[in-house]
Length: 297
Ligand SMILES: [Fe+2]
Image 1: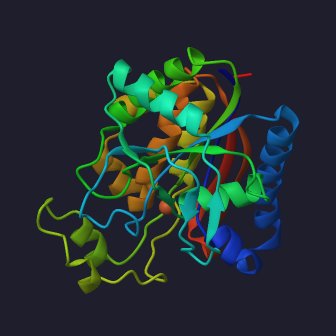
Image 2: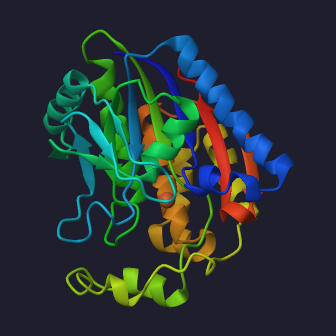
């Protein structure tokens, strides 16, 4: 397959549900980035979008917690969370199956789903880049939320292996997308503390620590700038040497753990430089919102 585009972006449902609340200049900066992403996808006409995103606990509520999972059934069901509508997105089953088989051969034992559901981490970027939701996707879910989760090194390495599988795959054109972050704190101290409790102690107790949306921390613009600059230099591995999951959560928020999806994409892109198409700290969306494009094509 030819990788004809590689984009990373934020995925908060607020981008759509709270569009009107954001300060107009910041909002338009972010939307302009998504428009450039949409224009490129329309121009390159990919056969499929390989989307690396996550789950916020609605789809895998600890009765099973995959670290990496690929959807191989079609369609993917958008669950309608975070103020978004329910939807269905076609899955490119041929590519999904080949990626699953190739990753297993290559040393990544992906979990897989023949009846995959997707949350706003997929649907928000798709609504902003393929508004008709008509480009087939291959959904790949990474655990960015419930410890223990993959190390940043592993997130990057899985991207390297995925990139090799794509490049050695059958003829076709794919755009790869990674979603999440940048810096943001989600929920109260008590809720974030609960999420950090040891595996095996949390199932059935999440409702005791409800997610209260206004209880969020400040955006760490300094972190966001440093992270984007590192990827611009093709220095994902340097970033990974200096940062851990614990340091990320402490300095950039539990929501920043989602930037591992950007690191996976940096692995796919083999450290091609990232061009930042848009960045704005948007308090009304509770996050540093960004769109970036790796120079893979
Ligand atoms: Fe998220």
